Image 1 (cartoon, rainbow, N blue to C red):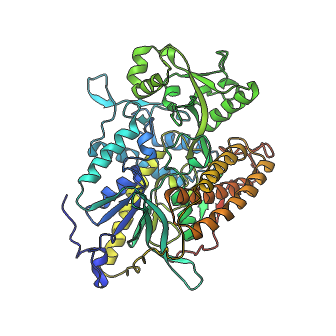
Image 2: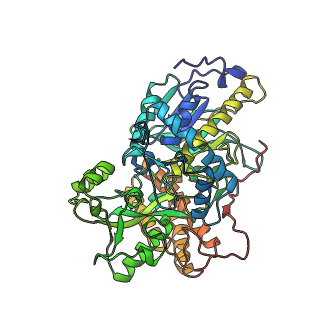
Image 3: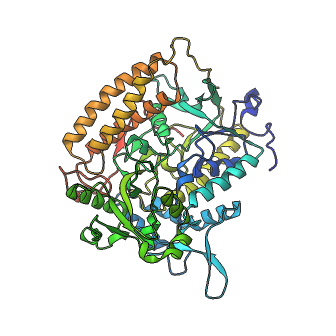
Length: 562
């Protein structure tokens, strides 16, 4: 890749050059599919930094098993994919957004294939290779492109290799973003982003990064719950930082609980892909009887919210620790060919899915709400973009349909990259000015974090009361209890943060607490059951008025003049 001439872009104007190791044209926070795709889109045009708080590959993308939904079969249509998505979203999807994303599905797949992602293929009737498509819950056709049952790993490792080869992308691993830095108006509200501070978790140093464009690609906040399919990094950092910077947040009451995570004390967060049900897997009670047709005419292929509630209901009704997912009737060769990763991992925990059913339980899996963005990924703060699970785009509505998330990541990261390129061009010809640099981090008035037990206790308490009170099924009383607890925790965390040196655990706890409050407030505001939000006090869907997203507006919100 040809290196960028620093005299053509970004800081080269107004007497500033890209000579500092912490000055860039674009800062990308997060290293999943959305962040790495945007970095690659920008690499030929700008100097890019990718800031990630663990190893570069460690992301939700890496652990995604199922695949990417796209219309590739001749018997499928864009209109069918749109209709399925709208139906799964329970009336809250924004149809223009759904259409925009679905229409770009083929393009997204072709781009990944061009990068070198090896999707699973089969031979058609004429002997020609074609993508093998599977079907998942909520889809009326086979339209899920996959790489066996480790699609995310195939995508992430391919993008990682490309990023590490790029001349104009600098990777900062083990850097935990602390907060965005913004230029503010006379009322203290954010006018535009100028960069951010990030903690090097290995050295303990907080570094200041400057750029006219910052992209949040930090994923969701499922770690706010005690049981989750997500890796430890999913602590809502981008949502919390955007909220503190003055961005509106929407639909945080809609957390998707994946119906089938492996139930085993050592499995922690191992997810059994929805594709297992798509290929004929059956959900059963401990006595071996099926139950899904008692809840939905689509049985095991009902959308995730319905399946998760059905499993939760049966577990509580029977006092059972788990339900069971059985695909053993499909035969050993079929299972090992289609699900080699799941077969190997469950075997490691002592289960043989070719011979017996797998014990499964629901777990927090995906955040359907987040930072409000337009179709270019722009947030309410000038220069600040957000892409991927950290966002509310309007695609998922009240319930995400399986395998639409990676599609959204790819389509929106490409759209945001195109917009940033245009904005950089305007900087180049001086139609736009550059923001001031981010000042150094000041910790002259803080002391060492010598009370780690406080952080550990608050971490545990937060995740437990969120699971108990703000989980799959809610009540007003449970939400009120959660609100009381989060207010007390917030006070403790704010005091601790203001007086102690920051570390990774404290930063994540601070962000989790912000997101927990946003989830609770959003759940309290919705006086109905819809999609992923189920409450015993309002068990019916309110059809008396057009459904609307739940939008929370921060005190520092400033209508954009962009």
